[in-house]
Figure 1 (spheres, one colour):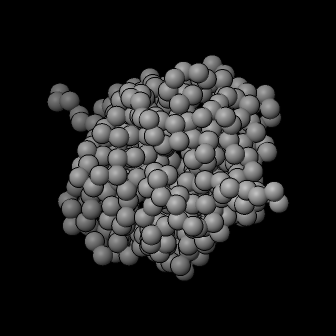
Figure 2 (cartoon, one colour):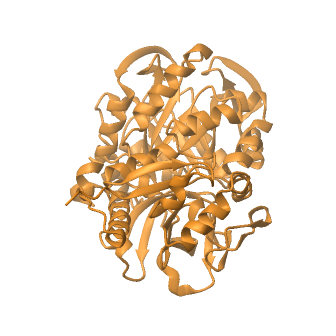
Length: 226
Length: 262
């Protein structure tokens, strides 16, 4: 009888990068994002979903996560059934380790983070095509081959190829969307990828709402992009 | 395949977009947030916001203008002007910038590039280089000198050497402006572009002198640029972003088409 609320999404702030555009994009697709910058924040434990955004280098990022108790809090939230959407560096942090500064990562997804293979130029900056490899609810409204905005030099190499949902080519190919259970990630920035990016975020919020029974209105992604 | 970018540039002073010729004779062009939103809808692949107001007391106004411009933009925003420390870079990123362009401060303190790249990742650090041609001799051109403070002060630094050094220190991208061509619509300095793109392995944004679609095609196909930036031709409606994209596509340059042409 009472109206259920929009899904609350904990956006992890570890001190680097553009949090603001992620927040705005999540609001634009009907979510209720809250910024969480320490592991003791109760809103993190109770959130049905986490978004780990970011630009930045993995070494400083992991050090900041640890310093604020966010690494264990993320582990606990995921173990408790929360969805995790990693964006760019947030995707890379899912894996075991990165060759960037020999950094130990969150270790939630088997695999390593390495420089993009055979890249003609690094960093890989700009719009590139997302080639969908398998169906997944996260890409239900993403056109195969849609351009998305990338800005990175490293990419995750999952130990198991089944987690790859989409790939992108810059010299060599790398995983640009991964999904394993409730662990999801995009190497590109959906919050800066126009209507296609918003469509993906809307599908993410839809997944979370569906799973938690939240009521949600999904605005047309194209309309909010304009 | 990585698509080539078309980037409108907003030169902002006193919270307004202005445009001059060779960095002087500034004329009001409108509100940065309104212009950015319009360009995003028209298919801009990224926006560059340059604070050309060097006054330190204007920092608060600047952050507010960045926040307004970034709001619901949904395409990337690069901000340059006046960033001298990693703390200032963090403030600009948190106001909604995706990348930060360092210019004068990086020349004065080249290690700033390394510190920013270490803290935020090199993909986040753009080094903006303003280049002025040195007077040539009968033996040929004498190269280009790095100028700072909005083109007002020479440094004696060679552009090619500085481009190499900036990249080695951690610049993830270069924004290369010919101040001889800035606002003239006489075409990009292709010799300058070639000289830089042939010695660095990071993306280079061509800036200064765009007069039409043909100039954009040349900057990419002849100059080796990854992206083309223009201000006055877009502000004055002389050429639309869609026209530039169509021209680039017709020349075989891969671009992102939006709307009906997607």
